[in-house]
Length: 399
Image 1 (cartoon, helix red, strand yellow):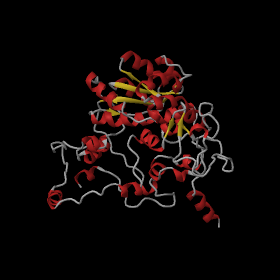
Image 2 (cartoon, helix red, strand yellow; image 1 turned 120 degrees about the vertical axis):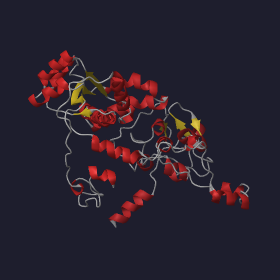
Image 3 (cartoon, one colour; image 1 turned 180 degrees about the vertical axis):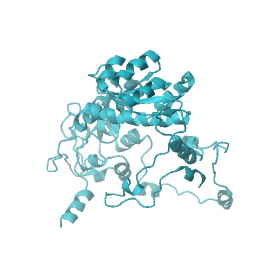
Image 4 (cartoon, helix red, strand yellow; image 1 turned 90 degrees about the vertical axis):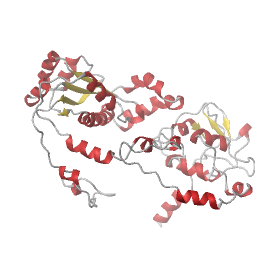
């Protein structure tokens, strides 16, 4: 049947190109010759099912599995090319090689174990036969089992809780940094944030602005390219000029807010590559131009891609400002061309997806309701609304 055929197609690995050392043809007839741990944990689906595409680990994209063709002469495959499953992408003879030979872009040959270590940074797990050949590990003594049983698990609660002193290098950043109080703190943060309609005429201290921008910089972006800029407008004369580009109901916000953040989306992220290369590994830095072309030209337009990344940073900015006791009032009612001209920013390279007046609120602020969760969140398809999701309100702080 059609379903059985599809399942068989997924289950059977697609043929890939393998280059044999010194012209010897690889004996492998499929990806099954690659160690199961390597195939399951390293190779992305598109790599397993056909030629290496644009998606997956950067190191994998630098590797080439080829036949007689030299790896130096090969070109990066277009990720949108279809995979020809009938093409001769591998050759095999019986027992020519003990294991496949991997060749990188520079022509360096590696064994399967060396390739695994280069990609994952750790030795390849032994096969079951090799494990059985090794001497068996002696069973733990009664004393060690008793000590392990009596060892109490570490629980971290509150800021004053003790921190583990061993095994820190093996912890994720989440485990190392969080102390258990964050869910309640984040709940307070999201409830405290509101769209401020009126600000006090009060300047924001420099040290507070520095903290705000430092927190915003931690926002994630595609491949950490950060295709955005933020101009903080604090000069009163420049604020006055900026009101000329605003709708009437936004003019007073600009004038009274201690600072106004103008977010610029960079439509020409290729110009950022030299700077980004300094904070990237050499392997990933080499691939940056191709990533940018893929996502900003083939999948999206340059402006769409830049705006998507900029809005993530704007969201971080909103919550970071709230954590520092500042109110924000994001606006989109403005003439973008006039804003860019006033700030001296080239419209050919930048757009303005959002402007955020920031300062100290005048008044109490207002809690605004949201749509019912069942109208927003779904499981697997729009036919299955998520169940038991509760909207967070002020009363939830004491629940």
